[in-house]
Image 1 (cartoon, rainbow, N blue to C red):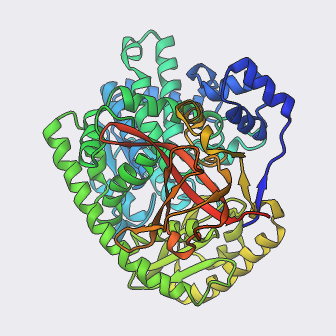
Image 2 (cartoon, helix red, strand yellow):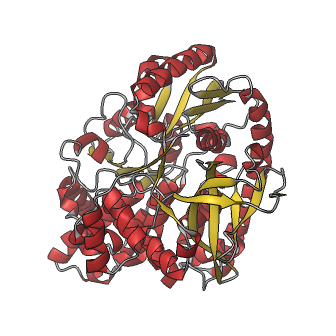
Length: 574
């Protein structure tokens, strides 16, 4: 990739540096991202819950709260249908906790992937109805496209409330209450537009408590909303939504809550993943340690297990459930490695194509989403990976910056039985005979998108060139204030110029794909630097190189050290 460093207003950098007393490189990054005033920078570096907008500004929030008030007052039977990913699991947990606190005993149902499919399918609706029929069904992280299923429920006289953030690919369901900012709150681009369902649940609970406090219900004053922020942060970070606007505020305080108090279920999962209680939970811990274990049960078995764990207040029960999730995750990793090895061989014949597309009916449909994400990240292009499930080709799509999967798949919609998601991630299913045509149409759509891309989107953006002597505790402490990183708030990439490596790279990892370098300039202490999958592109020794790196704290057994990660390298200009 071509490296490009953004030009900045140096006067604005100087202003932030002097007014806020932050590291000049951090000021440079803020200005490069359009944050030029001290007020905007202060709000970004030090988010406040008070900056959250009124939850009743969200379309249909009033109607939803009035419906819930009636359900609480009349003690309705309520059934919750939640998705089986981290966002759906945490959203379900949040709503169950709220309703139980207000005296209800809701039943909750998570789709069984291999018999009920994805989201609010007819199969999960039928299973729910086999239990005592509810007065109200609440769909979380699904339902926007479940027109037929909702019509069936309404015919039976059952009220329906949907809280979802997936985009609509067809007509909207009728005669129900739908909270979905991607459907209704798009024109003004409000700060809550890109909330995932866990974030929307936080807003709904906030509105619910405000409503009941106005009615002077003492329960509303004793329910501590801040204590639910850990679940909101988990759903937000794991779902790859934008980490700007209100998502940034919720993720920031949710991560802080992790460090202060761990609920019983999360503590059990942290212990089994060896995150000590004294050590902060980082975004990468959610993405690569906690999240995959919560997802594992939905991929291989019954996703009700993580909901039970997150709701549990019994340490022994939570520990047993966490152990079960860990074992499922180990099995998931084994299956995943086998699929990746096969996919790598297939990819050698398609490296020239604009998109990545795999289909193998033998591949586990619960695992292909992870494989899809890996290939999309590693090769920086949109990817679809499909297995076979219940006679259909079924799988996931993942994307990278500049490629909106919803727009890419819209020309393919006539080939699909069902699909839904957001610009960076989708789930799809289709008839087996349509797979070849989908592959062709997908590649054409990706190519069209690629041709329309601004050339800058194909460049590696360098936040700033720095020297080794800048990388110290002060720099890392201020840099940490930019977290959490994610969509619309990428982790900064720095350039180290004119670096000469004097030691051969150390190869490590089970598959011998990663390398470790030792970087020094003769004046400063050397740094260990990891280059993931670097075996493909090992930098030479004894010649000047420019290195593109990320810098962060690394925690191990409550000890903190500086970690460098190599992203790319090139020979220095003469």
